[in-house]
Image 1: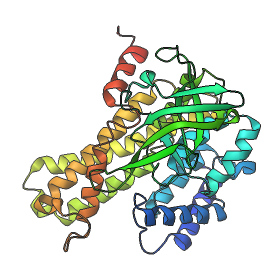
Image 2: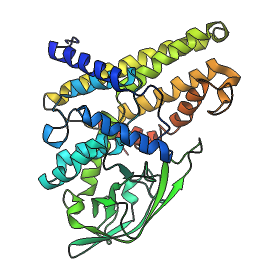
Image 3: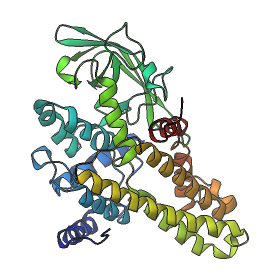
Amino acid sequence: MDLSFSKVELEFRKEIRSWLRENVPDEPLESFDTELGFHQHRGWEKTLYAGNWGMVTWPKEYGGRGCSLIEWLIFEEEYYRAKAPLRVNQNGLFLLGPTLMEFGSKEQKEKFLPKMALGEEIWAQGWSEPNAGSDMAAIQTKAIRKGDKYVVTGQKIWSTRAVWADWIFGMFRTDPKSERHHGLSFILVPLNSKGVTIRPIAQLNGLTGFAEVFFDEVEVPTHCLLGEEGDGWKVAMATAGFERGLMLRSPARFQETARRLVDLYKENKQQADNDPSILEAVLRAYLDAESYCLLTYQTASRLVNGGHIGPESSTNKVFWSELDQSMHSTAMSIIGARADLMSGIKGAGLTAEWLDGWLFAQSGPIYAGTNEVQRNIISERMLGMPR
């Protein structure tokens, strides 16, 4: 196994590091779960695009620069090291974008991908429904075809970024007589359509990162169908593979958290060493983050050589979500009683960032498919165990 980078890859790292040094905002942007922060982050996406960094792995004709997956991992490492703003359009860039590449028509790719890379169109994810959370086969929101339109009626919930997004992608039941994963279709819906109502949902930190989306006989052109009608489950499973396996959570995100955790331990060593388990947890976090990085490079190398992401994406999802929880729980233990200080409170300082990260980490075992469901997939599809 060759773990060294090529000369081209090293030059690529130097280029992105230099660009980020010159362009990352001096002051952090507001949270993109606020209206002001959302628009600030949209502006940042335009800055990235202007520098030709919108989505580096996409073909140039779709707003990318044709980089390899290895170069994308290098980009992510430098991006997180520079503490650049989080990507407000992650649902589009990392989930829908790769799905469009695989299932979209030429016209759909030309219509959606460049605007996605630019940040002109921000996407929300419309999977869950009130009675269909992790069990997406229970989806009931209908999209009935009438001529050259689908008429959509029903409700989605926990739709990420939906409060201020422009579009939503999701699965809808196009065959009302069908059951379970049959008769579902993957459809793209503009959120400014007549009949769409968006109701914000507050997160644990009080910000509106999610929303309920209601569809009251919303008319959607049939050219917004992705893939074939009735093949929604197949398309969505490909999207879920990207979400769990490689694109949504790059290892750089967790490596940067692990480095911050090591620094936090060093700054509070005298107090932290009162509990011997804390040092062990810090070391374990750092090693696990590096292990996940190596595994992801292995996966990327396999894909570059013609391989595919299979059910092992579920093991990735369980690993990184529980790693995120573990790292932030360790940080809470190091900080102690101050850990409850939220942003805006005098004296909170960096502890507020750790608290916000800890709150978000609690959702990790739920989004992208609950870890209980992922363990079922692992046991049945990887280990061959009975249902």
